[in-house]
Length: 119
Image 1 (cartoon, rainbow, N blue to C red):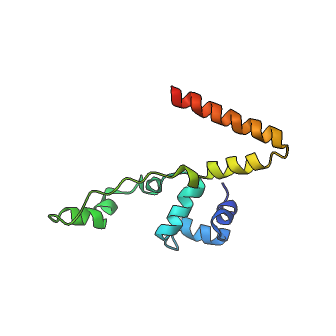
Image 2: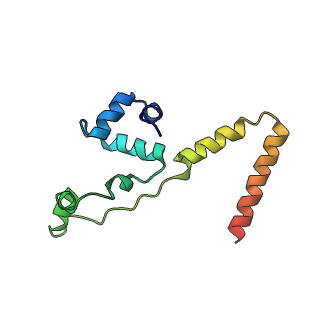
Image 3: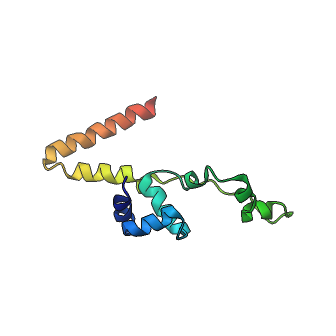
């Protein structure tokens, strides 16, 4: 995906995306969340290759050394209704102009889901 398309998807210019990529600007938590949704990856993806020295400076790791001050981080599951794939599927469905064809596609999807759930 180009910087320009990524910027459009999250409401920024490609120049701002370049600044994030180069590290000239910090990325806030909400923007990181937006990026993860557009790129269809979990937020943790951006931290997979974090150096051990950087990880050790994380407030979570510092607090874990203190007794009783930290709970285990909650796991985050992505709501399928917020995924890009879902939005694209709904758009494609509503681009079907023939109501009968659209109804058949709907029935097909329901039937496939029923078979998948039965297995």
